[in-house]
Length: 399
Ligand code: F3S
Image (cartoon, rainbow, N blue to C red; front, side, top):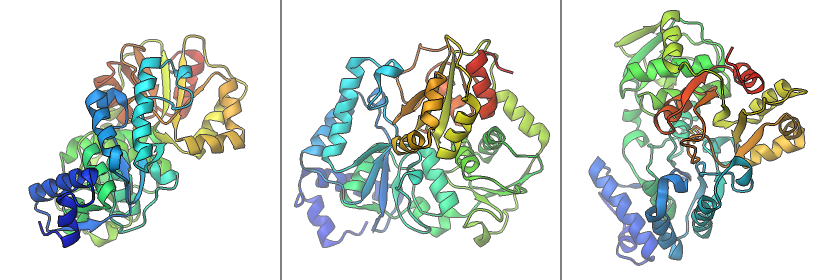
């Protein structure tokens, strides 16, 4: 890979230890993937923030980088293992909280905006069409490539930090026009209307795309929240972190529908729902906001919960970014939700928080959350609309 004189100097240690380590990672990646050079990026989003995933070796690595490293571009974080202010309210242990705070302090010393969200595009880290960025979290990467048309690979935590330290990333993969072309068409005949319908569609397409880029036809409309849920699902179950929807997403018009084609019928959607749902019995835990809730979704939750109470013995979490929660405070939604017994889980979510063993099951609107809650946290899952999930929170039943 070609390096400029300045980049060679950084690699040789001329800009300090953290910058040299970071440049080493970028050069190694670039060489593995055949990149010709490094390209400037506009922003970074770093995953691997939860102490639950990092452990002590991860914390030590961050502390070392923080000694002389400073990020060069706008950089935000993926959800951490706890609500950074109200962790006690979510049943997090003081030992875990102490370690998680050290992780956040290390990022702060590096100049990172320590706002922890998988929807950075809703809270000010919003690139525009065609811009190069280096983001990590799979649903955020899929949304930003597909719906906005910015360009990023799905970075690992260390490569995202390295890109932030240098302000550049190797030019390969989804940064290059030729790698953004769709490989397989999905003709959607099924009626896809609600948020969980989009999750179930993502489940079907991800499973059948098998690592290819989908080109989707037949969808009449989709809201931003439906597309964020669809992207989270489609990438979790197997597609590359980009999709094109005819007459909807910005790069679709550049491409023809690929010849290899699969039709998505009402039966396929129903079978996807069946595969996503377990036989749970009474619901113990309801978690909404995967990806993190938008303010519109929080408004919907508050409307439903007005004058109702979460059933004793059921825990209800609303996962969102802290700035979105602050908006919810001023709109009066927070008061309604907390009065009903719901809890805000800012900066975190049910997948990255240390929840294993705490709940037998979870109800969620998210097909992505089904995958991780089953696999990582060993919970049984139900997926459905906000209304169904909130009904489960107040009755303990899935109806
Ligand atoms: Fe976000 Fe956690 Fe879901 S990071 S996409 S809420 S698994």
